[in-house]
Length: 252
Image (cartoon, rainbow, N blue to C red; front, side, top):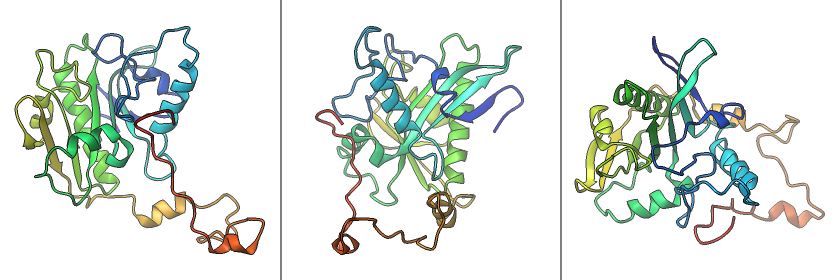
């Protein structure tokens, strides 16, 4: 993914550390769990805090959770330079089920459509010293929407805040969304819900692709219905445990 002057990549293990600091002072994307937990925080932990590495590892794992299926939950925009490029912008997105805070916001607005369940863009940030800040943000948002369309997503929402400095809120300025075809579906000027319908028609990732990418390593006769390997025959008739969702009220 690229334009003549910018490059766009999905976040991965090697580029995770390159995510630039957001506009909000003292915040760090590599440890932020503001959207993943109702009691989460954007503030970076103190350098000597015992949980720094644990928070970084958890955040990285969350961003890469969809990597084996359709793709990671974040995108970087790079400005090429002689050293190879510097990341000047960042977007975080994903299914609304991955972000309890987004769910909580959305529940306040009864007029929003329930189906299809949207993916959400929780963060859209470009570094303050980027001379074409708004243009870069628009390009990044456009590429995110193209990526979601590639994955077959048909609706995307964002929840910006209109403040004196609209970049301080992690979703970035509402004006950027408006310029890229989002409409205010609910809310007011202070807390708008921006929504855009996607076609999903260019989706390169279908159910067949998802199943193929989820194929177990041994690729034996058990696929596509792997049988439980338990200590007794009773295990063949038990439902699998539900996936654990982030706990908004305590530790994961």
